[in-house]
Amino acid sequence: MRSLRTPLVILAVGTALFATIASGESNEAKKAEGGGSPSAPASTFGVGDVVDLGDWRVQVHGVVDPYVSTNQFITADPGNRYVVIDTEVTNNGSKPETVSSMMCFELQDSANKSYDIAFTDTSTGSVDGQLASGAAKRGELSYEVPEAATGLRLQFKCDLLSSGSATINLS
Image 1 (tube, rainbow, N blue to C red):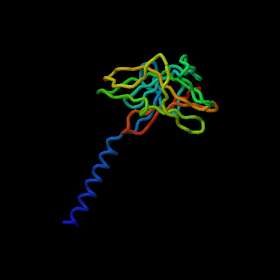
Image 2 (cartoon, helix red, strand yellow):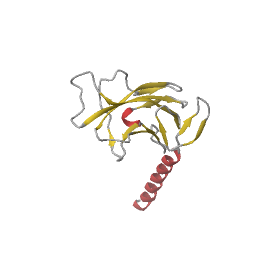
Image 3 (cartoon, rainbow, N blue to C red):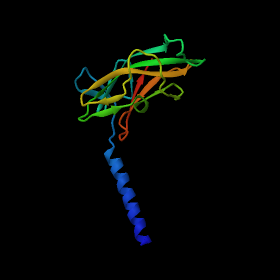
Image 4 (cartoon, rainbow, N blue to C red):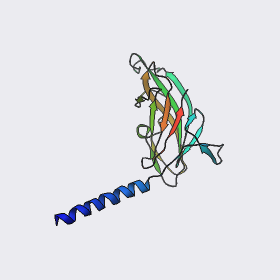
């Protein structure tokens, strides 16, 4: 019985692995042209560019760097500053999808160091939540980075089963 179990386990694991790989797509980020058809794939984008990535569309409308809170109790640690990114995400897919600022976005600097979402007193809400097909949500992403951090760029990838991401230069 033991000699039959090993091949069955290998077959089951192989089938699951193949199904996972086969279900993932290779998405390339493309700059959208004025609401029409997308152009050729690009490696990086800028503030204001509308970027299509699989079933998602993302746009950075603006960046406040440094962001200074009006609340005296919300301050960046000494030697750090806040960066707030005005972002809009659209679900161009055929079914509802969930956006998570922690899972879909990553801020990196020129030294490839990543930064986590920070909580500030920005006036606009976050992009987090479920989006129906065709729906969009605009909000702000806040990060705390060292004063010396340069070359900030926002990585967007919201489909965990596919490859590909969009890099938006913030300066």
